[in-house]
Image (cartoon, rainbow over all chains, first blue to last red; front, side, top):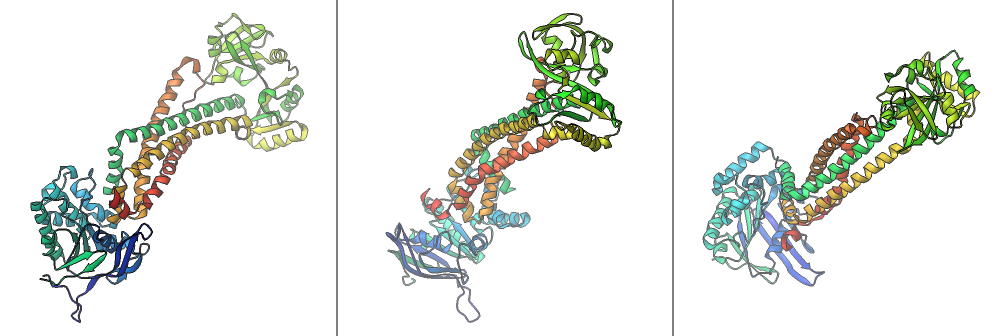
Length: 235
Length: 370
């Protein structure tokens, strides 16, 4: 297990916190999250497991500010996410997303896709290129930088999505079934890379997955059922 | 660079749609440029007739058209004697039809008029003008379409005239006109003792205000305007200009609808892509800038293509013999600028709703349901 970074008093520094978060759809007809509370410490890797529809993706969306809870609060580094006040800064500098479907722009090259967050954040070109080179080497994509997305394999696409998510050096990486669309072998490779990079970069990883085998390799494994989180005793 | 690539990529992705939009703007711009330039040219030519070797025009106050203006001959006689006046020439305008030509413009002039004095004579000479009441001088194009040669007789309206000269002039209206002695024109058009206007050349241009005041004091029913003033205030010119811009504007509005349609489709077909940009930190302003950027590229390409097409069309029309002299292809820089700005403005207006729609896309919904 990766030891969480600690405050001077010895307690781990919490970078992501949810307090009694409720979320429903269709005017409350479908309750997805029912008072979820959650904490993730700096540098921790956390897996959220559970059946489809249990609220994993919804919770990740709330963590990333893509959606708002009906009740409760979500805070990043102690600051509550507010769509009008700080969401843009969070998306640009604090949070990175990796989705099950890579969600890359097909007409752009691998490099161009990865540079999108740096354009949004106004990062200077030289710094952005240096970071791209670093991540491309780390993920084994250096030789594919100028290739269009259509020319890449599924694993390469997901690694590209990982690079893109990490371009602005976020503190938190939210991954929604990042290996869900990959075969078993590729899935294992991408997942190992995800964990390695997260640990090397000191990023807090919160990942939704169906794959318990992979989930078990995270620092924490949380079970979600019926809109609630259950943290089983760590093996 | 990536931002620009995002703009261009989307236009390239739907090439046919983009080309149609560019063509829509191009046709609109070409139409506007052509209509405005032709009418401006026509106005320029008409005002050129009035300002031939003169700087002030005197005509009847409150007439809707100079053809209806009646200036008494006595006024000409008096103005010629004013010390500030170098010369004052009465001009009578009339329109008549001839065989196969429903409109022939006639000018009733004195032999001292600058059009006669300074003309380039293809046949005959100025000494022959106004020697006999049934003598006329034709513009080169008028001689062509009336099939009249020097020394021949030509039917104009109900009368037959003797052609005693043929003039060459750069002004289309004059080139297609018939020049009659003033007295003959007055008789022919039943306007004895009057002219349509008096064109006045002053000894000193600074005396224009004094001349205008003198006309106002002496003749309550006449008005004197400097050429520039006349061009600005003459209602027919205003109507023509307004019509030209209105027709061009309608064309451009149609082009704008094309851009709006393209941009709406462009946004609708890539909701997910916009959501991805949002997740990666794109702000509303950046999303809107991307949409407006696309429409600006379409509009700018359309404007340039339209200017090229419009200019080619104008040059082509200028070469048509029947239109010789009627089309002035001197495209004013001001018109070019206005047309380009209007095209860009149309593009921006067309992208307004798509941009607002794009800004309202919620990433979470777009990613979940598409």
